[in-house]
Length: 292
Image (cartoon, rainbow, N blue to C red):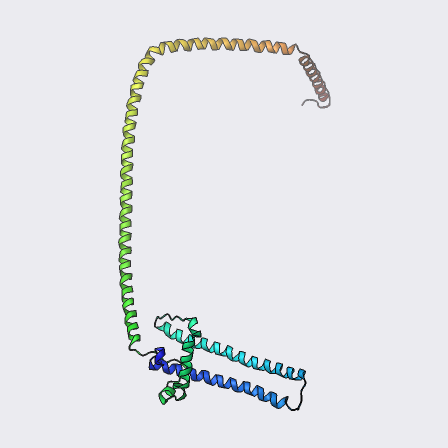
């Protein structure tokens, strides 16, 4: 098996699998041979057969043989999956990622090498190969590749711990820097607010000064126009009295015109009649209800 690049242990594992595959293959071939023997013993008892009878026997034999071959192929495929499962599980324990090239499964040169190996080394298995035939794969020893993998895993774990420590330190520094930045931003905002308040106070002082000047100007102007305002006020009072007098005359005139209308006369006549009726009713009540 030097052509495949296997060490002695892996070569023994391959031999064990090929022995298992050959035993299953021999068993299935015996089953197929028994199908033919059964056909001979059960059907080939006469000297002559018709074409239909021969066809029927061959069809039945074809169904049986096809079923046996299909079952063997399916079982072989499933067995190979279980073997790969063992290999992948063992590789994952050591953080390995195995890959396969499906195209190599049809490599004629490699297939011929396997067939040649089966004809030579596989025919005379020694005692050591028999001892290594176990239902499970033997774990790798602690030397060689396993030791290197363990050292690499330990180194990576140590480096990972260092990175975690450094990350925590950086996170702490980052949080402190963010806190300082927030404090600086708040201080800047407070300073800007104070400056804005100072500017607003200066603006208000200017406004107050301007209003004071305007007030003094308006006060001097008011003293000059105060007399004019009083005269205007007296004139306005006279105008108001005149307008009120005109309004009173207009109301009297309107009331007089309303009394001259037919609606007013009718309403007055109705009220007069009602008053007379009320007086008549009171007199009648006094008759029936004498005063105490």
